[in-house]
Length: 154
Image (cartoon, rainbow, N blue to C red):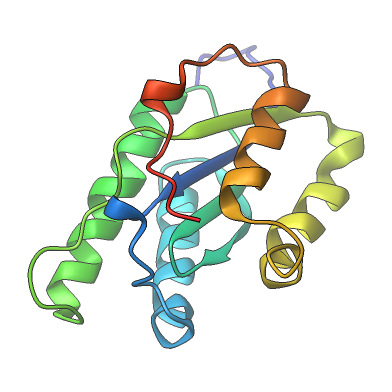
């Protein structure tokens, strides 16, 4: 960081397993999510919450602008794919889907977002991933083209 530069940026990333396969089951989440949290911290950000479902992941962090959001998520996906593939949990090669969602929050919303991320299983008893993701895009007024959304199989 450049001396005299002070920031407070909170970002919530959402990304999905390629073909939305439900590969990251509970037994793997116990290793993958802490790995991602440690990676975020090692990159100079601060991980607040990493959680998800077998087919997608939510990451909430205090973001350091030393890297762009796209560079950060690219590294998270690259390193976590390598981690999963080295474990040889699955036949073939594990991959994340292209793309991601990134949403910003204020300091006053941190506890609410952490709670949301940590309670993914409860949320998904009520709504599908597609409904959740489209609600984020609408809430944050993100322009999008349906052709470039995640592959939804809900």
